[in-house]
Image (cartoon, rainbow, N blue to C red):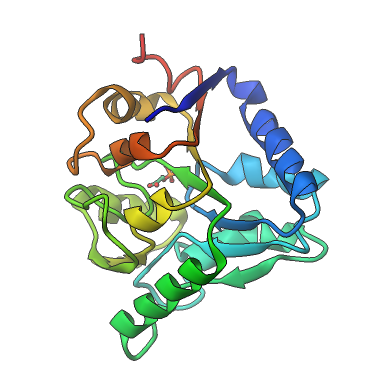
Length: 233
Ligand code: PGA
């Protein structure tokens, strides 16, 4: 139970993450990754698109909202804008389909694909309520890919992704699948994440802060900018 904490000035934060990511890609050009969307990884994805080849990799999208295809808050749309459209040759992409006729079967399909391929590197953001993906407070460390009800904070945050739509549900990879990865990176930036980061790293390992379960993983890097680190001392 340990993690490596990297606290960086905001101006270096994204480039430092992208540099190590580029090293991982150069060591393993066929890396299988699971990627978050949202606001946090945006500068990191911009940076990696500029200097690494992802053409031989496979990407599992971490989660998806129960929104119509093409909605700006859809995770697949965000990943397209932030990363895929910036690459000459995109990776192979696996994603959850919230329009599937049988959502439980769709989650099982995804879970099985993850079990088959394995996740070498998972890149995560941190919700202000401590969620990882859409593993909202109350999620167990043994949870797998499933349909979930969104927490109020998550629903309220949807508009920050440029949508006027709303939804009360989503689909997410579970904490068990995140914990099964070879390596996980938690990306945290901004003063508004300082309190929940403290709870994640220093509070109890507990379903009330699902991100705290990352402390059960043996290979985690927590990438923090100075503002987000302000409550760690
Ligand atoms: P954000 O979201 O990067 O948009 O702050 C993180 C999350 O909710 O996981």
